[in-house]
Image 1: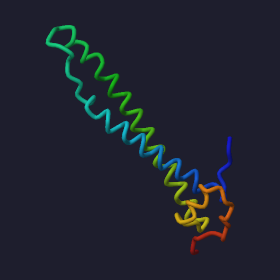
Image 2 (image 1 turned 45 degrees about the horizontal axis):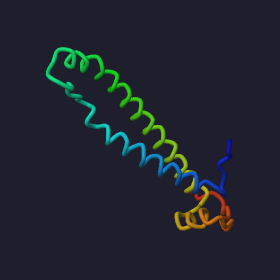
Image 3 (image 1 turned 180 degrees about the vertical axis):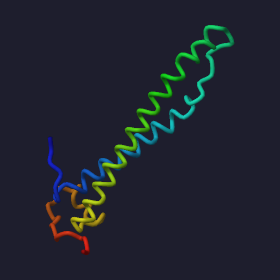
Image 4 (image 1 turned 30 degrees about the horizontal axis):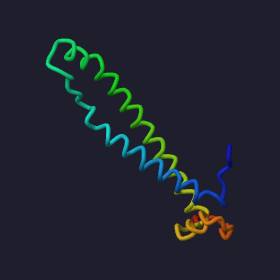
Length: 110
C-alpha cells in the first residue's frame, strides 16, 4: 500500500477527483432505474418489477454511499493539501514527475 505524503498528496487528490467524477456519472446514468417499468404488459413482467425494484434500489443506495465516501476522502485530501501549503499550480509539477514540490510547513494559522 502506498503512503500519502507531501510529495504525492496532489496526485492522490487528483485521482480521487477523477474517481468522484466517474462514480457520480455512473450514479446519474442509473437514475432511470429508480422507477423501472415492466418489460411487457403481462403478469410476470409486472411481478418482476415488484421483485427487482428493491434490489435495484439497494444497489443504487450502495453506490451512492460509495460516492459519498469518495467525496469525504477527497475532501480530507484537499484539507491536507491546504495544510501542507501546496497549491493547485504545483499539481502540474507533481504529474510531470519533477520533485519540485517542497514542504513549506503548515498553512494553518493558529
